[in-house]
Image (cartoon, rainbow, N blue to C red; front, side, top):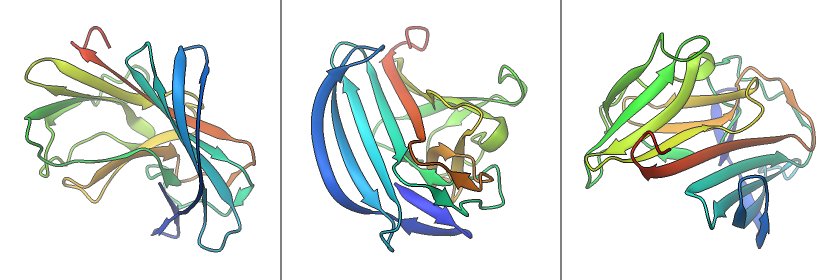
Length: 194
């Protein structure tokens, strides 16, 4: 997780870790949460990773424990923070991606290609949509905002390659305490099962 301000990346400092389990609308889960603070210790964010025991899904959450002011980057196509973030680079397994993008249903700017350090065309920001990553055997994962869709965004930074991060749109100027943003990853064998 990182937070941004004035185009500089500020890594957060982890101050507390907690493990728990429970159940929600998706199913039973095990969760690891981290409390992070800015370098000046003025604001706290709780980051959590929720792994479902009976469903092929993981939910990443950002909960803003304190009011965050002056967060705007002046760019709605960036993100105020990034959690989760994934490297866009070649792996031992050949990967491809399908990225929905464009207005309304995400077909007007849909792109596909190889997932590696040359990838430069992931659709992000206001017109970005769900991202599917696939291997040659049909194993697929789909990454998408889970809630607060009107403030959610993805950002492909440092492209080509680089990182893809999910968070709150970079043009948002303040985030109230208690605000939660979530990203879901669903995975299975075959894109239609996801």
